[in-house]
Length: 260
View 1 (cartoon, rainbow, N blue to C red):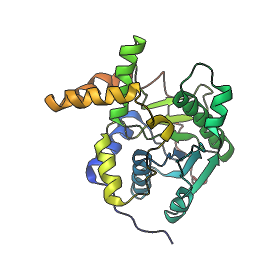
View 2 (tube, rainbow, N blue to C red; view 1 turned 120 degrees about the vertical axis):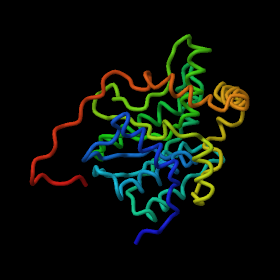
View 3 (cartoon, rainbow, N blue to C red; view 1 turned 180 degrees about the vertical axis):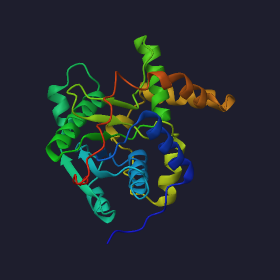
View 4 (cartoon, rainbow, N blue to C red; view 1 turned 90 degrees about the vertical axis):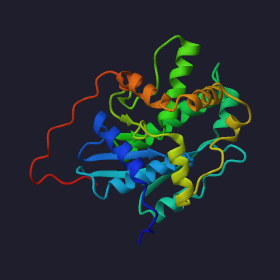
C-alpha cells in the first residue's frame, strides 16, 4: 500500500503540463526514468510526474534512479525507501566519482566530470531496464544561468534543452520543469516534507562557482525587473530543442499490450 503525500500545487502542475505539451515530451507508452539527485528539484519533479500519471491522457511508466557519488557528507541512501513508499520502481547506483575524478579527470572541473559520469550511468540503466525517456530536474533558473554562462564564457547563444535525443539516438531526454522557477520547487518540497538531501554535492558547494555568480546576477536584476525570467523564457524558447526530435510512433493496434 502506497503512502499519501501532498498534491503538487496547481501552478507547478500547470507549468509542467504546458512544457510537456509545448515540446511533446511524453508520449503514450513511454517508459520514463527520472534521475533523482535528492535535491528539491528532482524530488519535486518525481511527485509531479507521479501525480500526472493518475490523470494524464497518455499512459506512461515511471521509475527513479539515484546515483550515489560517494562524496563525504552526502548521503542519499534513504531515497530507495522513499520510492518504495510511493509505490515506484527505484534504482540505486553507488560509484566513487570523487576518487575516480582524482585519477581520470582531464581538464574538467569535478562538477563537469561527475555530471558526465552520472549521465553515462543513467543511459546504461535506461538501456538495461528498457526505459526510452530520461527525465531531468533542471528548471528555468538553471536554463537562464546556462544561457548567461554560454554568452559570457563561450560566445554562444545556448542553454539546456527541453527535449532532445542523445547521440546514440536511442534515448530521449526531457526537462519537464523548464518553465518552473526554483523558488516554486523549494516551496513545494518544504511544504510536502520531501526527504531532500542537504546540498546535493558538498564538493560543489565548497567554493563559489560561475553558476552561483550567474544566479546572484540574475537575482539582482530580477529585483528591479519582475518580468526578467518571463522575458528570458520568451527569448530562449527557439533554442530549447536540439536538432529534430523523432516524431511519435503511430498509435498501437488494438490488442497490443499496454506499457509496463
